[in-house]
Image (cartoon, helix red, strand yellow):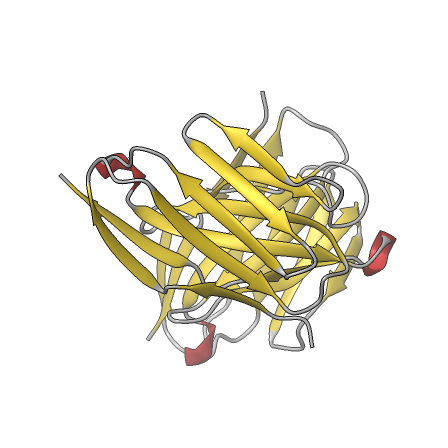
Length: 114
Length: 114
């Protein structure tokens, strides 16, 4: 069964810390992996998308890595700010063509304290 | 630039009443469209997806239905709401076939069935 797990479910850090969010997946035959951000009561914003052939993607203070062999992805946030407080979701894409599907994690709720 | 709209933003409906949620996308053509539900403590659940006008695929059997009357319009409906239909409904779009392409989400509709 294809599952995506995000640990921890919640995280609270002081402002300025570098932090790592984890996403693990049971089936390593992925097509790609995406990280999303969700603010309370809002829709999702795509942060980074890593293709299965890639090892990492960077956008500003965010860096996402992918290790298919170990079934893991990490989202690294540098110099965290209170505005980074949100829920971060990981979604893994499997399959091909019309049989492709996204498997979602439950997210990590991040709080950055000023 | 592309934008995605959902309305209403919030909705409170009694059990047994009908439902109609609307999603529209601007600034792109022939997008793939998706309806998700996010219930408290649970991950994102894909309800329906559409690769073209009149083409709807259902992922989960339920009392909900979807329609795509126009290229950039996606509607989620129910004839009789259940308490279990409460949740946060998200519409998303992507370009290209399959699931490996980046998805962009709308602001969501919070539905409470009383």
